[in-house]
Structures are given as C-alpha cells and as structure tokens.
Length: 309
Ligand code: UDP
Ligand code: MG
Image 1 (cartoon, rainbow, N blue to C red):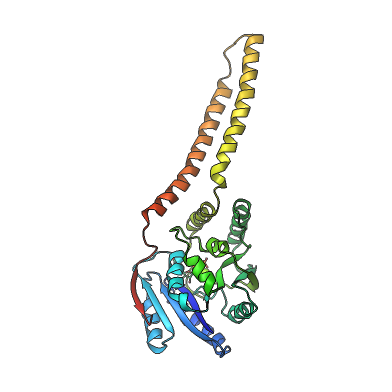
Image 2 (cartoon, rainbow, N blue to C red):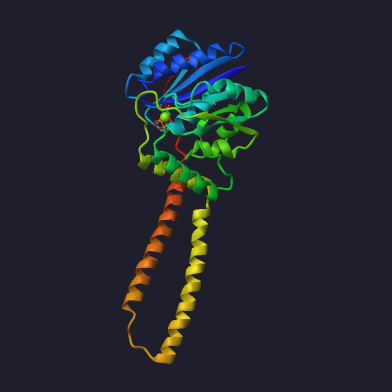
C-alpha cells in the first residue's frame, strides 16, 4: 500500500533533522507499506529548502514542492494534497514533531479497519500554554454552536485521508481554505486516535495570537452564515422594543404633557444603536471581504519548483 506523508514546512531548518530521524525510525517498523514524503516548502527563507534538496537527492521517495513565496499552511496543504492524489492514503503531519510520527501505525491500522479519515485527538494538551488551551476551547465551543457540521474538539490538521477523501477535499473550489473545516465537511467514516501533544521540538511557532484570531474568523465565516442572519433577529427584537417604548413615550406625553427631559436616555439610545449598526456592518464586511477573495479566483498557490515529482 502506497502512503504519502504530507509535511508543510516553513523555516523549519532546526526541526528537519529530528523529523527525518524520528519518522524514518517509525517507517522502518512498517516494512509492508511503501511511503513517500511530500514536503511542501512554503517559501522558507532559511536553509530548509537546501536540506530538503539534499534529502531528495539521496532518497527518491522524497518529493519537494517549493512554493514561490509563503502562502500559509492551508495553501501549502492544498498544494501537497494535489500532488499526493495518486497515493492510496495521505497522512498530514507538522514538521515540528508536535504530531508524533508514532501515530502513523495507529492511523494505518484504523484505515485498514475501513475508516476514510483518521484524525489525531489532542487528549493531553498540558504542553500547550494555558492561553492557547483557553482560546482553542473558546473557538471550538463557538464554532460548534454556529456551524451546521460540528468539528470534533481538539483536533488539528494531523490526520490520515483515504484517496477518495483527498479527491473530495480537492474538489472543493473555495479560495479561503480552513482545512480542518473542509476535512470535516466531506464526511465519510471518520475515527479519532488520542495522542499527547508534544512541545515543538525546536524553532518557534509561526502563529501569533493575532493571526490565530484571524484564522478563527476565517473558519467561522467559512462554515456558517449564522452571524449574518443573527442581525435580522436582532433587528426584529430592537424594533419590537422600540415600538413598545414609543407607545410608552406617547402615553406619557398624553397623560403628563412634555417637560422636555430625556437627554440621557436619548444619548444612550443613539450611542447604543450606532454601536449595534457598526457591529452589524462589520459582520457584513467580514463576509463581503470573503466573497471578494472568492470572486477574484486567484490560484491558491504558485509553484516555484518541483523535485522528484
Ligand atoms: N507552516 C507552513 N506555512 C506557514 C506556517 C506554518 O507551512 O505559513 C507549517 C510549519 O512549518 C509546521 C506546520 O505548518 O510544519 C505547523 O506550524 P506551527 O508549528 O508554527 O503551528 P502551531 O503548531 O504552533 O499551531
Ligand atoms: Mg507546531
């Protein structure tokens, strides 16, 4: 059985030697399978590409797709999946060993039991910072409350995909690619394998909290239109309240005359409703910007060179 290991790499010169050594050790224990590595170099500016090239020279089963600049992990994964489409199964791993290669045999075992998608579940995240755990938890709660198809909690991109699952993901044409959502959207029989999330072996995470926040927004807007529809209900509720209030103001005027007070309530109402309007405009803007990205129909990534492909 031919399995592709898809590994996106962006400035991972420090982690690559560990990755190679540890993954090879695991693969040696699986002689009944044929493996190929698909490294997607996502515009690294350190010696990552050089190291990959020397690996590819020695090992013909090491393929490299080098992108013309940094396009982000989601685009890198899409590039890798397109290349891996011929493999019977594709396993997506991070380069920093946070998703341990020891998961590979467990994934293959589940695949042979008939699952099309086998994802790693981060059962133990104690090695992540408390802030990361808290924000991740908040994201999953929010996402699952909004999206029509809930995401299994504490999963990442680390997973095995059967050939037909890969084809299904590749057939989705959108430009904004929240891969976890897409992997989940395609359906098929899926199973989780718990693992303990490791600390990054070397180097630094490529994500700042601001990028994570934007990524979360992308995921939410890509998977649900509820935030848009919410404003219709909000509008109805506010109009209902305003109508009752108007009746009360009119009744007061008829009963007690008009002593022209109410500066405070007027001010509060103006500020409150301008806030509500700006928020609703912002939500519409979020979706509009995504529609804009989609209609431009730009390619997801540009390939600079391919090696052993
Ligand atoms: N990565 C990538 N392009 C990027 C950012 C990250 O290909 O723009 C790769 C990175 O090399 C690693 C994986 O995506 O293999 C996960 O990145 P990272 O460890 O920084 O993310 P974290 O684990 O902190 O969520
Ligand atoms: Mg990492």
